[in-house]
Amino acid sequence: MNTTNDIDFNPEYTTVWSFPERGAWATHKSDYRGNFAPQIARNVIEMYSKKGDCVLDPMVGAGTTLIETKLLARDAIGIDINPDAAKLSKEALQFKHKPASKQEVRIADARDLSSIKDESVDLILTHPPYMNIIKYSEGKIAGDLSNIGSLPKFCDEIELIAAEMFRVLKCDKYCAILIGDTRRGRHYVPLAFNVMQRFLKVGFVLKEDIVKVQHNCKMTNRWKWKAQQGGFYLIMHEHLFVFRKPKANEDLARIKYSANFV
Ligand SMILES: C[S@@+](CC[C@H](N)C(=O)[O-])C[C@H]1O[C@@H](n2cnc3c(N)ncnc32)[C@H](O)[C@@H]1O
Image 1 (cartoon, rainbow, N blue to C red):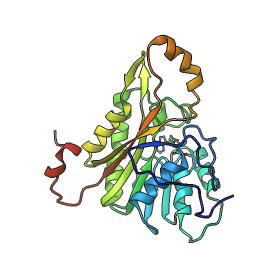
Image 2 (image 1 turned 120 degrees about the vertical axis):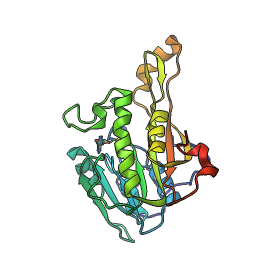
Image 3 (image 1 turned 90 degrees about the horizontal axis):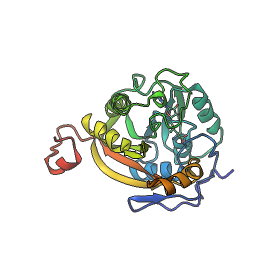
Image 4 (image 1 turned 45 degrees about the vertical axis):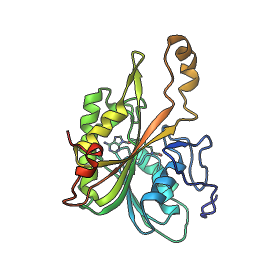
């Protein structure tokens, strides 16, 4: 197991990211459905935090973000509403790494981060369900966002999480969220842009919109022939939005088109 920082990794420098080969270092695995590539976490953590910082992932799944914080010597809090995911995250952190840092996994609802103090976190990186495309708890856990099939209802719940993330993040620090879109009735449902608007609404400003090319998607083979015959394209990208929490009393006029100025 490679837990040194001698890892085959080149930092991204454009707004299009593509990782045909998912990073497989340390304890990273690909078996939690919908988990993101370690390269995403590594790029975001290296770009927007420094050693010793506190990183939060409030929908941590199988722990990709936390593994990377450990390898990069950042402290971290990982939260998931699903005890099975929290267990996987804890197991994935069972390796030694120097310099040491502290990772904590909690079972909680991201809509209520009251266990975390105001303005105590240096970076947030998270990856919510894309409505009910993957039903993580099969409807068994109330509060699991992957139970929700209605776009406005989903966005209302995401807005609660965005407001909590805004509260716990320090000013002038960053919050990154990976989110994809879907189709209904062969038409495009712009989930990502709707979610982005809710982040602006709670006070974040938009720093980056990174397009992440999707690879190894389980649905591709199932839908490929339908798309070819049905006159639509398979969605093969997601958005990694990076938001900044403005400084107290910051004059946003200069960046009004990146903020909620309407
Ligand atoms: C796309 S997965 C995250 C995958 C993660 N990035 C990884 O690499 O393993 C979304 C996660 O959000 C969790 N989730 C859904 N609703 C939640 C809520 N209200 N609070 C906290 N976690 C929630 C699900 O249990 C699921 O593990």
